[in-house]
Image 1: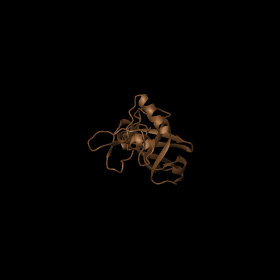
Image 2: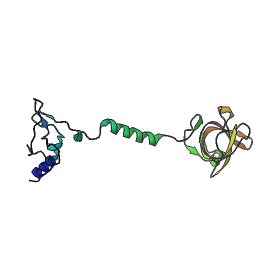
Image 3: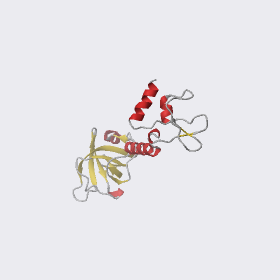
Image 4: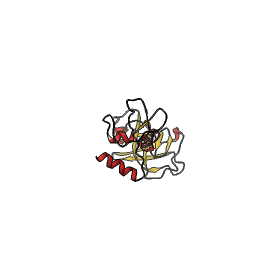
Length: 180
């Protein structure tokens, strides 16, 4: 009873009620009653092929989101999650971020990645800068990596990778790359 009312309402609002199958001659069969126990939704939307071998009628509302749209959305989401923001000079920093205190104590591997704030830099050529994190300050030399930090603003958050260099009591980093 409710099914017929829905079909009548759909027809009066300008929608054509289709049973969901196309005969072998290509003509769509129209109807207002379910057959073989299929529900109204399955009948109207033709979500599954009927057992009699007929091809379901294709309509714009039963296609759902296209595969291309879904893949594009997933790709955009994945790229957004993986993208590292900022500008890279030299090689992109990789590896576990350590603290300056751990570097000074000798508790890190020779190749290290640090994160902090650039508080001072070479005023002439930009060939070195001082990096500060919550545990201390360290000098970072960029000459051997072939880039300078002239255009990097002071007080920028910087991630730097490089080799630990010791000279007497002083410990510094010979940078291989930075991201700011």
